[in-house]
Length: 570
Image 1: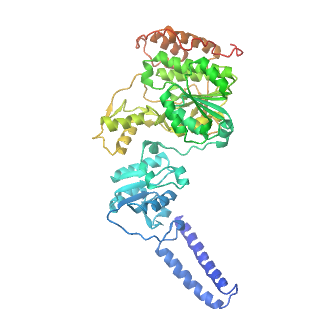
Image 2: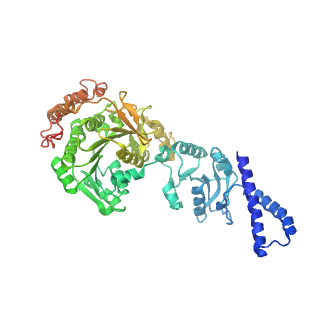
């Protein structure tokens, strides 16, 4: 196939040479053809010399736009680098490096058609599998990865080859910076775990998202958190009439304001320090601002911490949600989206149970609003997540703590998760539980070892220590219940579940009992009630394994009674 393509290029080049000769002859003699026999004699000579020259300098490849006559001199004081990739990103990087103390000695690329090709004088000297040998042969000091669109699987392979070479390596920014011509030496950065876990780019129906958000008044709760702040940033791209960023954490909200104030439409943002469990405050806020759409990302999320604070987890994650839903209903909001978690599936933790209760509430509660739950897994780089914890342990502790050798988790990057949440928002119908495609689960031990290597250390220097599963933690997460039917949606990365759920009248009675136990029950009685509502949770608990907790004197939401609209009935 490559040979066939090469002959096509040769034929095209020959035709172009003959056409240029004919055009030059016509221009010289004012569009007449005198000395035609001389022209016929000269044509084969010119054609032969040109084609031989092109073969000598390996120009039968079609990459003429990267060919230059720049003089290349080697200096002893320049650091020799090898570039992985031979496409547009590599070409931009080579141009930029020409004016620095780096000397590019070659490129490697898996495309056989590019072997031997020169980009601004820099030759493609091998494949990625040959990277270590090439680096040694050319005495390379550092490797730059110029593959901004590569998938996670291919990037892991590239990193393995770079690690095998024993050289330092860095990568260039993503496609957006490449498209804007902003690939510079200063933007080269160390490879991080997001590069290794990256996926094929998520293709969003941007017009559908814009149609649902443009000109709307949108509120994001938990706005200062990792997911909430990215939600705010992406929502701004779709020109809402107003964006309300709400969080009870004042300092975190202040830093969010500093970040968002640099963006377009910053004059449409309002920052509110408030608590979703305060029904009176929520109703006033929603009515006076005319909020139409709510993204609820406000929740406690740390599993072991919530195991010892179960009543507070219920108060905030479950009854705070109910309070916010009722306030939104009273204020005439139109749409409501709940951020759920894969920990809601067969939950072993209090936090997972609160998320499952949230899903059940939105799925069965009658409402004028269109209410949707979106379920996804761990988010790379979010506050308190495993990656920043591991990175801190590597820097400060000299070891990495993993709970179990076989523990796995689903991972998504923050932008990817939020983009899919917005897409799910446009797809979901009332009561839907939507599940995002998170790819294959990642073994946490492999993640820890990768981070150790990327830090420039070995496991001998930074050992992995196994501490045992923490309270509420399980070995692997699941995306669906066995009783759930998985249905497709218009977006390939978003699925919908369907199952037989508890009716609202029954669920409401359970919730009323749960509220009383949250206010004045023991921890054991509270969790027993949770197991009544979520039978799957009962399988993971042993009776009597928890001690009673202190009674709460008064619930912050005790004065916001009905959790169901008056007109909805039983």
